[in-house]
Length: 493
Image (cartoon, rainbow, N blue to C red; front, top):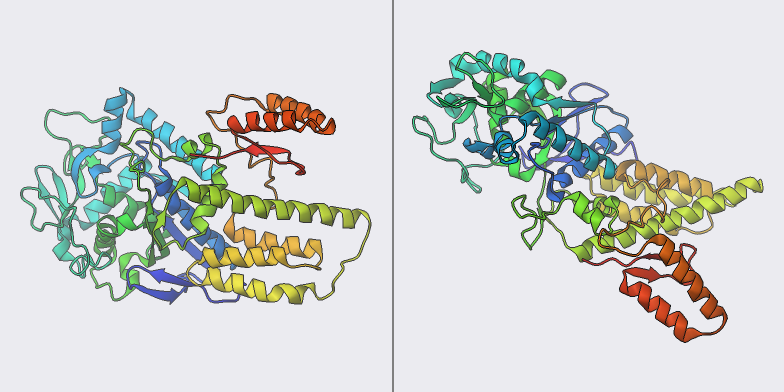
C-alpha cells in the first residue's frame, strides 16, 4: 500500500497531481481551524475528518508529518469579506463575558469534538492572538508595495499581485458574490489587513500598530501562522470549500506579496504546492446554521444515542470532494455498518486469543497471498485522492475472507484502520451503546425487566414475555434474543 503514488486533487490547478514533497521525506500541512465564538456544527467537523484522513495517509506512506491547525480567536467578521461585526466580540457582548473566556470555552469544546471523532492531534495548534506581533511585522513588510490606508484600516490592493482569484475561478465560476463595497477601496476585492478600532469604541481585543489601534484581518492570520511554522512554500493547505471563494484567495495574495509577486502558474508562489477543499455537508431542515437554536453539533448526535464515530463513518462513506447529505436515517445506517465491523473484529479477537492460548499454528500458510488483492485495492483507493468509500468496501471484503489466520487478518484490519481511524481494534459493541438523553429507564431497570422476561420464557409464558419486550421497546430499548449483548437502544430521530 505504501509504494503506490499518492494523487491529490489540487484546487488551484483543478486537477489530480502526484504528491511531491517540498522537503524530501516530509509532509507539511496547514488546516484552517475554527473561529471559537460558538460550538462547531457537524458540517464544520467534516473538514477535520478529511484533514485527519489526509494526515493519516501521509504518515502511513512514511512521510514525517507536520500538521498545523489554527484557532481563530480574533479578527473573523460575521461576513467573510470584511463586513459586519467581529464574531468573537459580538458573542462576548451577547453573553456579557470576557472574550478570552468565550475563546477558551469554545476552543475546549472543539478539542473535545476532535477527540470524540478520533482525529489525531496535530503537531501544533496555532492560536491567532499569540501571533499578533508577527502579523504586524508581516503587514509592515508588504504595506509599502501592496497596501493602502483608509479611515477603517489598512487594505490590500489585489491588483498588485498576479492572478488574483485564480483559486476561486472568480471570473469564470460563481464570482465575488460576498464582497461588500467599502468607501475608498480601489478594487471591489481589496480586503482588510488591519482593522482600526472606530473612534470612541474600545474592543476587548486590540493592539497598537503603525496604522492605529485595532486588530488584524482574518485573512492575515493564516498567512502568518502557516508561514511561521511550516515555511513558504509548504506542501498542502486544506479547508472547507467555502474558503475557496474569498479567504484562501486572499491568503494567496498575501503570500505572493510576502514571497514574490509572480503568477500562479507556479503553485509554490501561492504559499503551498497543493490546496485541498472538502465539500459541504448538507442538511435540509436548516439546523446546520448556528443561528438555528438546537443546531447540529456533535453533542446533539450523542444526546440522541449515536456514537460520534458513526458520524466519522458517515463522512468516510462519501468522497471528501462530494457533497454529503446528512439525515438521521443515514447516520443510523452508518452506525449499523460500524457495529457490524466492530462485531466482526471482536469475534476475530476472541478466536485469535483462543488459538494463541491453545498454541495452535496458523491454519493457512498462503494467508498473505489471499490478502494481497484487497490490500492493493485499499491502497489504490486511498492513494487516488483519498477515496475512503472504496477503501471501506475493501476493508469489509477482508473481514469476509474465510479460512485465514485470525492474527494475520487482524493485522491487515489494523493497517487499514490506521488510515480510516475507526478505532476498530479497541472499540466494543458496548461502547457503541450510547444512552439517549431523553431515555428515562436505567440500565439496571432494563436488566431487571430482562430477567423477568427470561423467567417468563422459561415458564413458556409467552404473553408475559411479549408484554415485557413491548414495554422495553416503548422506552427505546431493543431486545436482542440470542445475542450476547442482550439489548440495545433503539435509535430514532
